[in-house]
Image (cartoon, rainbow, N blue to C red; front, side, top):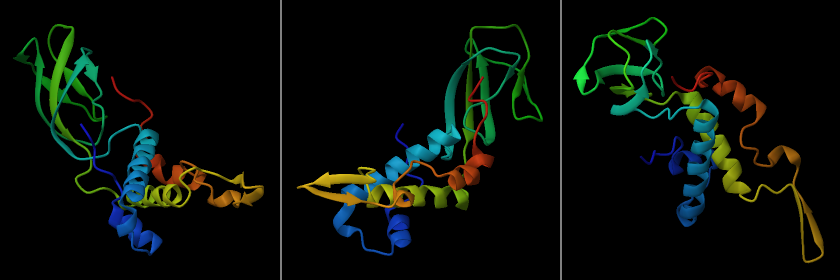
Length: 174
């Protein structure tokens, strides 16, 4: 499943205050890479997904990946519905005898992306767009070029990591 970028090309153009019509490939690459970096750091897709089907190993308590979990449509073991209960910590408790796998259908993610996540994605996209090779110092034709280290496109800066920290999972899944 291909995910839409968190920051759009229009967001990037607004942030950079320039027309990107002539840079479609470069701006697409920048927004996709920035979105992938934010998702990797947060350890989840973040995107709203309706009726996602996951097959997970059976456990008495299962933590579903890609929170926030909006709704759980069905929980099946051996192709039969089983009783379950949603716990305060967001996991689900299963009733019945242990089995190999549990098939869960649920809706998850942010219907509207939090502004801070979008802001971080567009900042990273701008750095990638402006300096796709991530060069700080390089030479060409016997001439040395230098870019200040604070504009080199690090994947995520320390302040961006701090902004995303509330959205980062510490436990990936069950």
